[in-house]
Image (cartoon, rainbow, N blue to C red; front, side, top):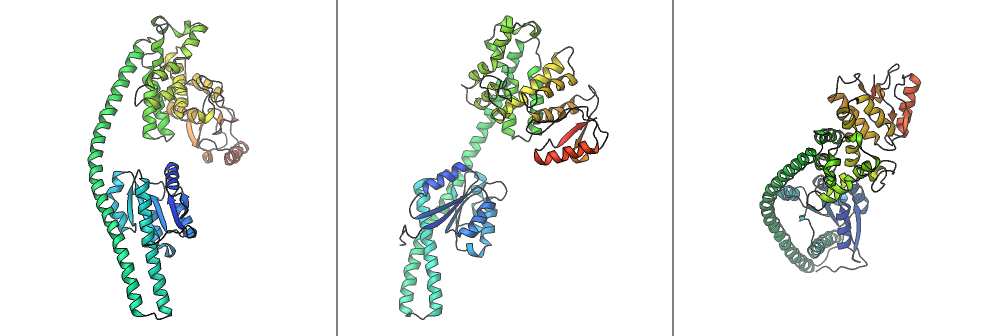
Length: 449
């Protein structure tokens, strides 16, 4: 068998877009006989492999950009990496089902997450033995091309090496059998999980609707408010490109953002907001903390309660309860804060208008409100509230023309005010916008009259 000498280190490259998985691989391979390098993408992995020439490459299958299967195929087209052992790993059923495709594409084995340290290290060492035996055979063949050795000695060495290869081949065959068995088990397990998830999602939806109805039954001045805030928040979340799971949590948090008011007396809950005293307003301002505490105790509501807790935080850190600043405030909280204000002014106030709502929001951009969220709200208003105000146009920066009028204040993505609403654009001001966009990017589109 091949010995592992700490003075002759085996080169191993681990590629995974998950930093935690990279740390686990490094921990498992922290032995003197291994030299380990890592990459967070298939593209970087291929660059490092060309220079590092690893003995073994371990790569995740599911990665953004170049996935593990493509990375494997590209590596196999590199002359210097032809003899490198390539191991693919995945925790997803669909990827396990693709084990045959992976092996046909050049992979030497297929690992299933989570990795077991002993099995993982043992498999690495088994492949290293094969690799070194193959390298030794190639070296022997090269030497034989230069100098003739006794035929009997060569045959004896070849038989010994073939015997070792046969033993390690049995290990690989057993691995493939295990993959096939695990694939079947995973398929059965995933079917059950899908059914459980459907039941869970339906139960969560029903509970949310029930709680939302109960909340609004105590707020005669806010009937329909939660549904409006949820509609606006989901629209903004989708326009900002948030994931389905993030959007779902934001929708539920919108419907339940006033659940903390269950801890408020019926007399105060049913009171007209215009009649609230300063002390009563202070009590009402604490309802997000109460609501978050209530929901955090129940499975499935952890992320939702986190969003609700911070709905009264402000961008400059002067909000409550934790004085979070900027991006430390959950994006869901930033969205609901603006959606809540918009609905209260436009739909809950007798003298409220879209113009008044945006006037208040734009005054607070950079201090209270997120500029990107406010921009998406403007798009919502144009699509859903058309006819309530003067019709606006949404233009790309490079489509702006002189004599167009800015419909609202113009902010950078960081919340810095660049121009006032009502500014009549000129060639000079448009040039200023374009130049500044290269330094501190603005929203992709601008609203003009």
